[in-house]
Length: 588
Image (cartoon, rainbow, N blue to C red; front, top):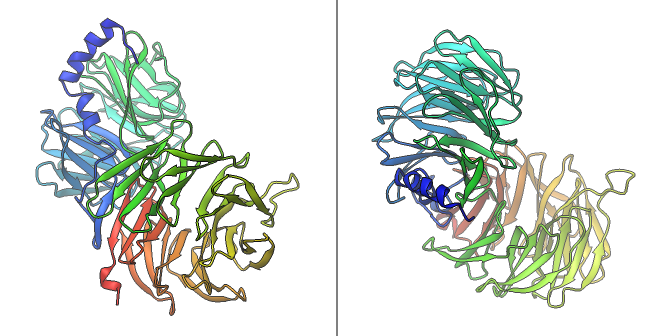
């Protein structure tokens, strides 16, 4: 946006101290890293979600807490230095000690870790919270650490011994953030309903402020202002008296981390949707918006030749096309009119179909990203779409309970398949989560409610209903020979069905949470599945035995897909990354 001359002048020293510029350069969405790859993985696309940003005291490095761990970046050039891994869930906050020799991180795994900032080794693991820890920070003298968690408590720890010195109780909701004042005399903490200011020495509650959904609190450098950011307006109070100050002119900060500039004139917010926003406090205005990390990954798709993979990021209006061998970003396909919700290649690799939040199907040129056809969809969200084997038609799965068949050239609606169960008398239907053609193109299999349905692709006539699940069926797909169907369900199981008789041939158990996706390998000998337990599994399609468990994601695995030669498996996760796994040792 255009800034008044005075605002621009005030931004110059801010950039000089690397407050904004380096934060942006530290994690452009195009960056890939092989740092900290799990065993068996050969490439990671994306660097995960961002929850916090902290500079080292000498401004030489940046620590970013995120879904994969703690990323350490060179603050001058933006290159990644290390990925600190050890937490088993997302890192919600990361901060340097005042002398820059330590880093403290708080994680959803309910632990706090203290790291050696130079070597990246874990020095101490602090256990005391009983649920996810959302925030951890050093006191100004470096002798204490304050933390807040979902167990509704604030802990004060001895930074050297790891002993809990004091537990501050009074929050009635999960504590989302906690921070020391610059003089170390006060602690501020927030939950879903209130912000509380405590005496750091005695633990006495000084002020309780009525403030909803504050995810992050920060004191100004002079200690006079307490700011809070979250799903409501970015709020400010007098730290000494708890009285509200003029709110900033914004529609809300969907963010997990806020920070003051060193001169106290600006506030930056790192948002969970990948944006960084900067406000000028004096004129109460938003002066800058920048993009940061990408969002969650729900869909990806290999090109037919296996050389490329297209990735869709949540809350982004575009697709990224990556080179599978080098990890290079080849192209960004974007359309500002609507957000892409999924993507799939045509059989010849020339086109990509994407479902957008304008409820339409968009077919684009796979090389240039040019829009070839906008197919008018339902007045309801479309969950998935794919091409027929000959590329002439499309099938889509709708949240209104319908499966629709479209002409891929003209965009004409050819048929509507109805049958998935109604949810109520108001004519609401259970969402259809997936729909796909059989290898010969003569059948369509769809998954929704607690059933799988097989349809005649030409006439749309229902041929068979596969029943037996107690929970929602998340996906269903044919084997390469068309004789079997594999399905994934919220009941934590994967099932193999006889596609002709509808009999259950095998039930695969091993996931510890909802199974979101399952597909056959190109040779039909194996099945890959992914679930909400953050893991992917490779199964023997004949015996049902688990051949390999792939662990490395810190969020739900939402999609799995084999490369055409079956030597690579891609997994897409809510942690904001796609991992390519080397399966060459599993091929005969």
